[in-house]
Image 1 (cartoon, one colour):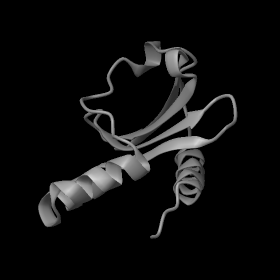
Image 2 (cartoon, helix red, strand yellow):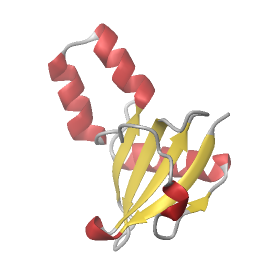
Image 3 (cartoon, rainbow, N blue to C red):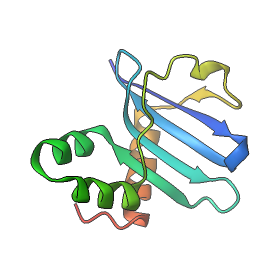
Image 4 (cartoon, rainbow, N blue to C red):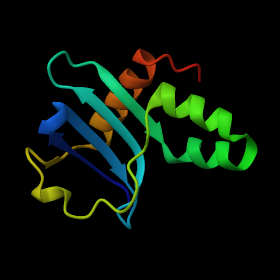
Length: 107
């Protein structure tokens, strides 16, 4: 079962939004600058896996530069992070769509 949550990363002044699988691994991630609400990351594990299996390192590098880098490892303990909260799937989908559009999603 998927879960959706947010945390705040004070050092970079970023809101971090995650969609995680039942083992806590990130499936999709959105990062938004707090000061101006601009998305800086909208990364997807499915894209990373597809590029790994069907493209080359250059394509993966272009994707990471364009959409950012997905968090690695299980997201356990997120509840203890600053301003952590669960969010709805609908709220995450809205953020995801807005971030991809802002970052120039061609899909």
